[in-house]
Image (cartoon, rainbow, N blue to C red; front, side, top):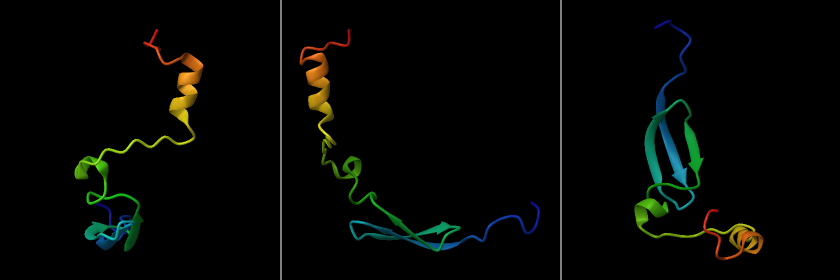
Length: 70
């Protein structure tokens, strides 16, 4: 590898919005994330449906409730 072209590798602190703190290797010293394995629905088993802006209702109004992919 060529010397002087690679970024410095260090221990990084990752802080999640839920309060969990992790130590990982990265080129940045600190990172903030919104979702981690402690609070992500896939890992916790809690399934949430997020309907932003009424997308489901707009789809049903446009195509009707009996839309079968035709």
